[in-house]
Image 1 (cartoon, rainbow, N blue to C red):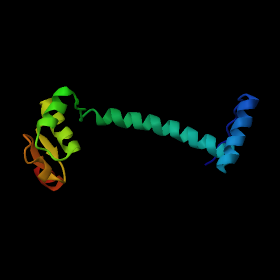
Image 2: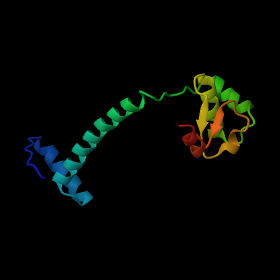
Image 3: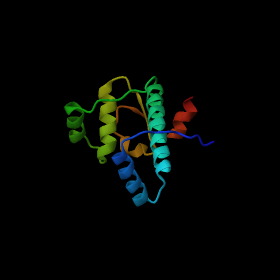
Image 4: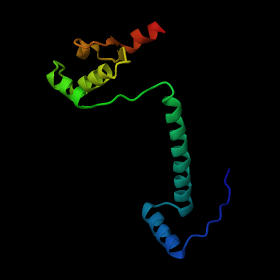
Length: 120
């Protein structure tokens, strides 16, 4: 349902916005609607992150992690980075990945998604 919104910006802002909208091949009202939706989505994303962090944590990547990675036998940089940051964090015991072969030298319990789901 469409609702009318009255705005009173400076004339130069309206002029520039209309030029921009024309360059984009859109109506000014459509651009304003897109912007308002992005604000609402941003607020929703922040709320989603707050929920997410009630049961997830962020691991630290520091010099210790990087040195372990450099000295490791991991062939994939990103896999090594994930592995050693998780090991260094201390509370993480399991890593879920589709590619368990890259984690043969890991101290973590490595599971495929299917294997993990079977533990639930």
